[in-house]
Image 1: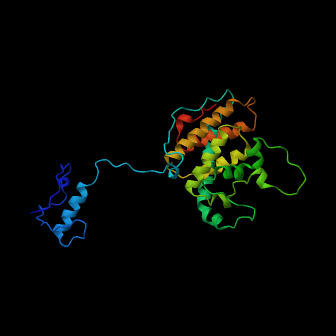
Image 2: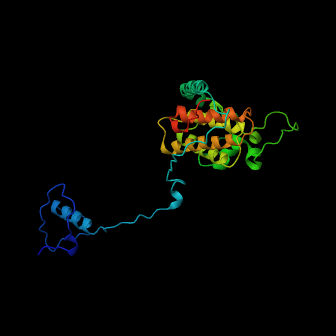
Length: 269
């Protein structure tokens, strides 16, 4: 008499890939031992499939997941520039052309600059170290207090730990796309609650120059967020001759016209 457990009677929802003849196995068939014949092997596969649960719930450790799994891309545009603040179309086209040339130069010489040894005082943070990258790019004084106090003359030389390291080619050439996107996110988050600074502007420009096209969804969302924040800060600037205005205009221009987010573009003055 063949050994046929009740679990083997299963409704087939999918067609069989290969025809399997009914296995005529004797009572001595033991599914717990390795199969000795092709028929026993096929029967064992059938039994194992019948014992699989209909619904399986995966045990996932949330700590191992990336902090932000869902990418929300807002379709809202930038705040219109106040009267007299918007750049001309010619100016925007010139900035896009210059930016394109910078990107080509960075890509062309990336291997050379990546091979250059960093100074002994330069220690690049790990990609996931948000606080470390903020201090590395903007300096400890700016990150800890939100403003930069005038430098004292107590010690000679430049203290990059305090004022932040500039985005040198020898530094940014060592950053892969995951790190570029992460640092862009860290600085955008910092900018979301604070004013625009020259240190921030230099790094944002450099990161955009290293950002590869076509954009990943995360990068697409980040640069749109950056452009909108620039337009919000621009509204708060009282004087159109303020040095922050052309810098903010430049970032909006690059996001909208170079990275093809045309709905964010400034209307030419």
